[in-house]
Image (tube, rainbow, N blue to C red):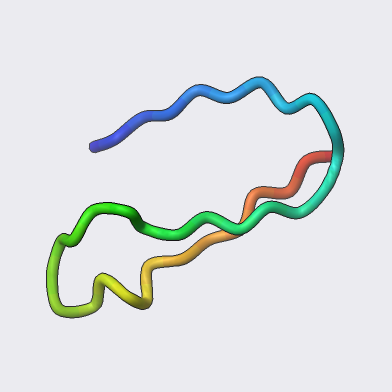
Length: 36
């Protein structure tokens, strides 16, 4: 597992994209981070 700790400084919707080639479906590993 990879753990990243962040301290948001502003609200918004942020895209997260896998940055480590990990297999055949690597290009589909995306997520969103919602900060209120």
